Length: 524
Image 1: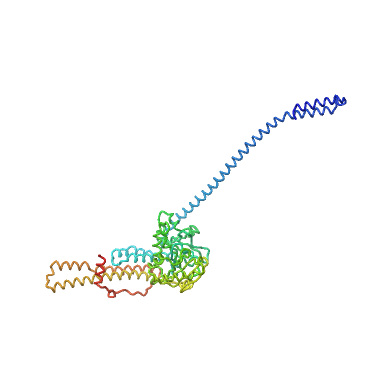
Image 2: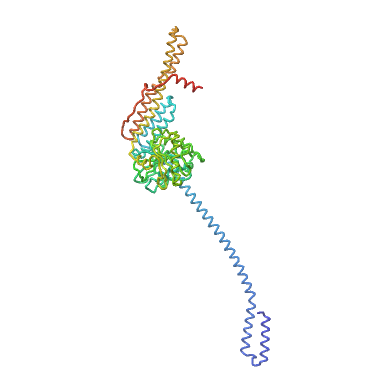
């Protein structure tokens, strides 16, 4: 309502009042005029109110915009805060990881064996025996002999670290990458502890697994000492993989050659050795060659071997497995083949697979105790050939004579050297005999002046083929072998003797003509 409208209403009221004279100066007229005046005054205030309302609206819009900006800023700050928390968590995890690694390395380096027998064995092997080996050139496969002695050293380290092991029958578990070795061993546990498994190579360090009353995870140091890994990290054993080893600036295996896992186990007297896959070269890994060497070393020195084939990757035993097994000298080993993860194959295919594996093993003349189609996840045997896996394992569950077995390995090395040296002696003696025969032939032909150059050259030639060095080396071999035996006996705190037939020189047969032809063939 405008001011002009109010004035018009007043005039109309006045006209009505003059028409009706009784309205003049009446109370009603006064009230109407007063109301109209109030309305006029209020109408005058409306523009100001509109202006105030607009100002308030502008303030509201500004506050709303500021609130939106603050809300966006707050959201960004929250996101940044969450990123910082994640970064802090990652840094804390990395720091804990670094601390664990540092503690592991320092513990391994400071951990030493206090066993006198072990220290004596190391000293004799690394000094006296190596000096003998450097002088002795008769044995062609000397590297194999030294590896056998070093394997004994590693066994002694584990035994001194964990004396209960000397009563266990060791069963090495081998196979290719991802054949399921760790999962296979874990299937025999009666505890919550499990060996690490995964699509990437996990078993980086050979692990002895055996029955104990309480869970134990120990690292064996290169000094023959032990480190309780659970004191560093309760789940440390599950983290020791190829990736973990590669995170160091050096090869961790050099100071931590093996581990021991003790847990509640179904078979009291069995000790499984979980070995690295022999064929990790199919992935990019700097330690592939080291894995192959480690697998071959531990599997070669085991008297009982379980070989796993992964059914998820193979329809039969791979040719690479057969080639590797052929290099292990299986003559005196108990070998059992397990076609693992058999639950991934249709039951109708299992029989054909086992027959195919059997055929290939026979083609390669690989002797075995049995073949089993087995599921480690279900702990179920689908089928088998010759002998059940469970029967085989039960046959292995007996208290072992580790002491005697170790001495047999020592004497095997002794016999290797002795046979090589005696063969060398007999060959040189045969040559000397022929040289002497030539001298006699010359005398019979009338060349009786032994001062002639021909006789002098024959004497020089005879001196070249002297056996003095070999005779000395035979005595040294016997001496250092006896020293190593005494050291082994000291570890077990018991001196024992085993049946051992020492090879005699007259038992070695050589054919001088064949020897000469072989040498000529080698020259050609």
